[in-house]
Amino acid sequence: MVTPVSETEPSEALRTLRRVFGYDAFRSGQQEVIEHVVEGGDALVLMPTGGGKSLCYQIPSLVRKGTGVVISPLIALMQDQVDALRALGVRAGFLNSTQGIDERRTVEAEFASGELDLLYLAPERLRVASTVELLDRGTIALFAIDEAHCVAQWGHDFRPDYLMLSGLHERWPDVPRIALTATATQATREEIANRLDLAGARQHVASFDRPNIQYRIEPKADAKRQLLAFLRNEHAGDAGIVYCLSRASVEKYAEFLTDNGIEAVPYHAGLDAQTRALHQARFLREDGLVVVATIAFGMGIDKPDVRFVAHLDLPKSVEGYYQETGRAGRDGQPSTAWLAYGLQDVVNLRKMIDGSPGDEAHRRRQSRHLDAMLALCETVECRRVQLLNYFGQRGEPCGNCDTCLTPPETWDGTVPAQKVLSTIVRLDRERRQKFGAGHIIDILLGKRNAKVAQFDHDALSTFGIGTELRDTEWRGVVRQLLAQGHASVEATYGSLVLTESSGEVLSGAQKVLLRREPERQKTARAAKERKDRKAPVELSADAQPLFERLRAWRAATAKEQGVPAYVIFHDATLREIATVRPATLLDLAAINGVGENKLNKYGEGVLETLTEP
Ligand code: ADP
Ligand code: ZN
Image (cartoon, rainbow, N blue to C red; front, side, top):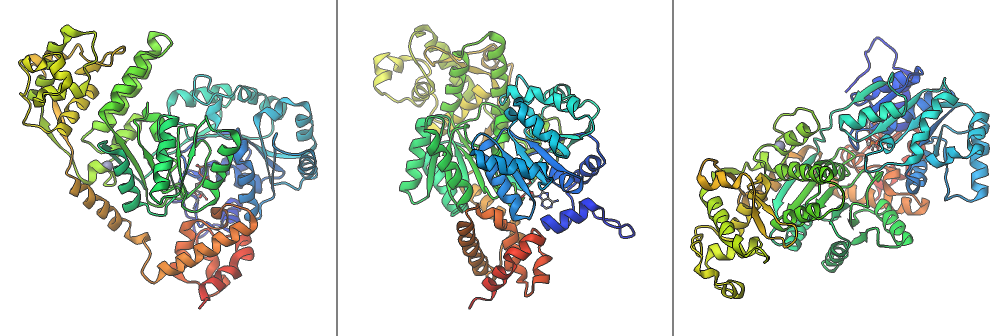
């Protein structure tokens, strides 16, 4: 935290932070970037989701003369962004294709006469000559290029219109530019700097750690039951996202949750645009709604109080996983990233990669991504350290992930691994059949089922030699063999096959260390410990009913004004109010998140709510 030195006056930027946003101090990194841009310098800012990027351009826009022009691809969210700023008393507007002509004219006139602090623009608007002429008529404080990784041609979110943004500099050489993204890798960063002509810009790379997010990964046994337990025990009434791989499972789980009394809506690319927009808007506006979605959902969703992100299928890469889980807890409050993954996920993804179109190099790249994801799932080390390492950063064991809370044991699984692999060897003669993991486990357990009978597999020498482990334990063994590359999945039939390293395991030259899943009751204790850990922000028994009352007041006010609840006050702010119980407007002004405008607008309402009988 950067705090002002007592003998110097607080800077104009800091005064703006306090007056408009109601926050005490800049987060590390913000102040340097903001002061640099206020002085007219260019900047490239990499911060994780929730890191506080918006203030990096909003405050300079307020401090500098003229209007800050924000280029953003997220048209659907501009209205909410502008509403949130207006609630703070910031004069903001946007121009995009969703507007009627009258509304557009109004915003254009406001800009030209210098009545806007911030103007949000979709990148494609800059293709239109009239937009450029409009910009020439006003005074531009700065250009902010949000979601700057959209300029990266090999990235997932590439937008051709972003390539034109290098022209901003030629047309308006004196206007500072600030590019921002949450995408971390070195390659993307370099590409952004090159393409946007920002080689000389000040770079700020924040730590990608998100300490308030608890990372947990557990084996999938009965996904529905596990999800329900997770939501009921730890996140009752919370807003969150449940990610699934396919549209069908999105529908299935949304229905399942609704049937079980948890309000949930589906979101995937197969729904019509109107339904998608409606579900997104409900998620943003309502308290405590769950969205079950494919990865089509999420970019730019800046709802601060998403309390959990759950994955019911294995993500294809660590990047994707980190981006998706990063949508939890932008407000810095305790949140959970929970993933359940199983053997079948690994089999499915391996098959998908092997069968995917494109060249061999592409498949190998995808395969490497999956390997890294599997390594994260099966690690016995701190998940956070592993994640940070992946992004080239260092960390200490965090105490707030499942492996830190209940360290898994490792055990020498060489013999069970050999049993699995030698069964695969024996089945290899009947290549043109699907002998998946389930069948191999049945053989090891000595089950005389139909398939075993059909192929006389009870005659195999490995039949029934694996009764020392239970079915779920065998699944763990196979999963980890796949993760460690000692076995693989054949693309056509989905059978398990040997790999280059299988031989070494079979001969005993290579030991296989496996992770033993901690017992369930330990996991429950971990959840309890987590609750204890967050005790400082947990509400006292006295404050809880006040908090609920404030939430009800907020919901009513939000509805009346047609804005998302968090635009009025964040949960953290309501919590602090419920604990401190300010008696006067002056006391209320001292609460984090209560700036000048919100004090004027909502101060009386809050005080009344607090004193209600
Ligand atoms: P990003 O765009 O990087 O994902 P945001 O700009 O939306 O993140 O900020 C995330 C949250 O943190 C917001 O609720 C914001 O108001 C809050 N925030 C940002 N900077 C500060 C600060 N200096 N003090 C307190 N809260 C802050
Ligand atoms: Zn940890």
